[in-house]
Image (spheres, helix red, strand yellow):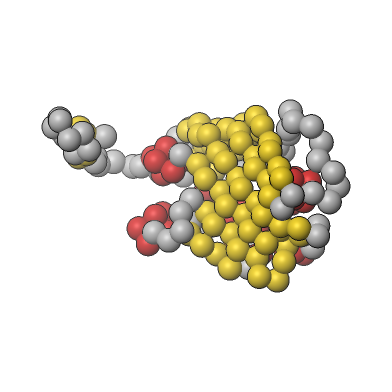
Length: 165
């Protein structure tokens, strides 16, 4: 997620959920700014609904009530990675919702590992405010940018053995 995103889609009307989401993305680490565009009961879902093990790696993961969770995610992402590239590839919207699809490339600040991931953002809202935002990415890839050693032994294929990752 990055404030330097751009879109190739048609511009949204100034009050649409897509326009509000794009406005938030223009300054996502400023709580007072973002709060202007979110409801009092705003919910932000990052990567999953709730996953204690992932939250140990990425503290922002899970369901967050309040605008602070969204803003803190952008602050933390900026601490954990540098954003090398952030591209919006497409946007969609309807009366009370919007979606943005794209890709990003991050380099972890501790290990210097670079990863590229697709992303999707779903936003819901009306009356110039968002009430819900959900962000999804290739979490397996982004977490691997923090991997310092060890391996996973994976048994997923019902017809096969295990693989080491």
